Image (cartoon, rainbow, N blue to C red; front, side):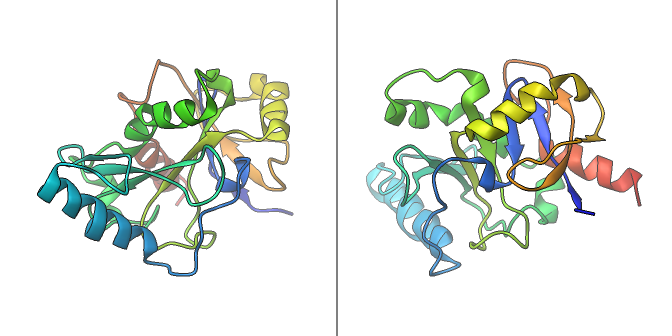
Length: 204
């Protein structure tokens, strides 16, 4: 039996493993590459010259940067400007921690610009890798198109996804997940990292 991994479905916004997304992942030859780019280059350049290069954006107050992935035409990465290892970091659960998912949802404008215009919400995916499935030691959220087969599976099982975590009875990119639905125009009111932590605490 396959393990059931956590997932959140948010008004057509898919959050799961990066395998959901169409393009390949960024080059992973150096597991600290993203941290180097954001901390040593983007943040420093923003402080010195008020330009975010090579990032697309550096939001020092919000604590994040947006960066074009090395591969793929449209994939964007949302990366904390603080040192955050990944989904397992306790910093994500602090009361005053930034809502990186909301920042990633706002950063979809960079993805849409590269896609050539507005993209339907159901076609946009935000994804993060698990601790065992990632290649970088810095948290990053992928922003890109959801794979067509994943979108079709979610649409077929939309009636099975409610307001509480529940296993999905369908493979998504070859894996099984739990799912829940959130309502709203964005993610400003709910942080999926904290929702997932709350669910994990209940099953211990």
